[in-house]
Image 1 (cartoon, rainbow, N blue to C red):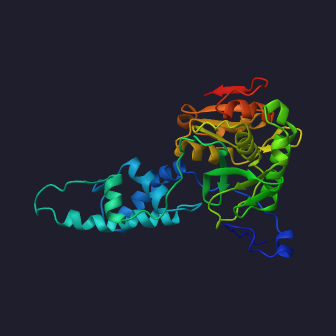
Image 2: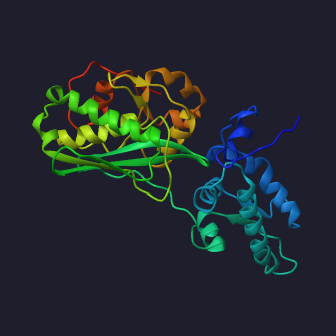
Image 3: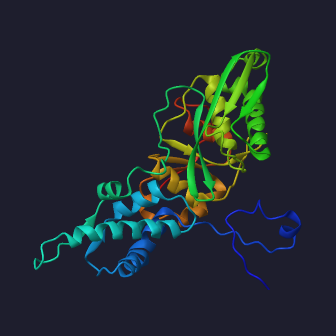
Amino acid sequence: MFVTTANQLEPIPAPLRDRMEIIHLDGYTEYEKVKIAQEHLVKRQLAANGLHEGEITFTEEALFKIVQDYTREAGVRNFERQIGTICRKSVTKIAAQDAGAPAAAVVITPEVVRDLLRKEKFESDASETIEIPGIATGLAVTPVGGDILFIEATRMKGKGDFTLTGQLGDVMKESARIAYSFVRSKAAELGIDPEAFAQTDVHVHVPAGATPKDGPSAGVAMTMAIASLFTGRPVRGNVGMTGEATLRGRVLPIGGVKMKVLAAHRAGLTTVILPKRNERDLDDVPADVRSKMTFVLVERIDEALAAGLSEKVKAEPAHVLIA
C-alpha cells in the first residue's frame, strides 16, 4: 500500500484517481499557522540560525502579516522559510550591538517584517462599501484557504441575452443561470417589471478572470447580485454569503464553513449568511472570531435577500444567530 499527498487532484490521470481512495483534508487556517509558528517554527528557526530563545521575538501581528502578505499555501513550509529569512537578517542587528553590553532582544513587528522582507507578495481582498446595485460578496474556499469573491452583475438594453465571464466552471455557470431564472420567476414579489428581462441583456462577471473558479456554493451570492441589479437595492457592504440555491428557492448546505468565515472576518465583514443546515459547522470556528460576527442562517433565498439587500424584502423571518 502506498500513501501519497497532493495539493490538487486535477493533474492526476483520471484512471489512476478512480483506483485511489482519496481523503480530503483542509489546509491550515491562518490562526492555526500562527499558533504552529509560536509553538514550533520560531523556536526551530532560532536554533537553526544560532540564536538563543529570547534574542528575537515575533509579535502575533507580525506572524499574521507574514502569513497574509508573504505566503499563500495550505501548509507552513514557505511560512517557516520567511521566518528563517527574518532571523538571518536580524542577526546583523544583534551583532552590531556594543560588545559587553547586555544583549537587547530584537522585536519583530509588522513594520519590521515589511522592512526586512520588502514589498508584499500578495494582497488580500477587503470588503468595501457597496453603493451600486448588482454587486454581492461571496465566500469561497481555495487550495490555500478561504477568500472573498465579488459577484458583479450589470444590464443594458437588449433582447434578454445572459452572459457569464470570469473563468467559471460548469457548476458556477449552472448556479448563475438558476439565480437568473429564480429572480425572473419572482419578479412580481420583488417589485420588478417582468418586461425588464425581455428588454434587457444581463452580464454577470466574477473578477480575477485569469483564475479558474468552480464549486457549489455561489448560488446565493449570484442570486443576491441579480436581485440587487433589477430591484435597484444595493447589497449591504458588511455582508458576506455562501450557499447553493435551487430553482424552488431552497438554500442547500455547503462545505468549508470554517475557512469561509475566517476569510470574511479577515476582510472586515461582520455578517455572514449561511445555510441553516450548516449551523453545526460554526462550532469549528474559533470562539474569538465567532463572538465578533453575526450569522444569519437561512433555508430559503427569500430570507437571504431580506438579510442582504439594503431595503427590506418581504420574507419569512430568518434564523439569526448572534454568537
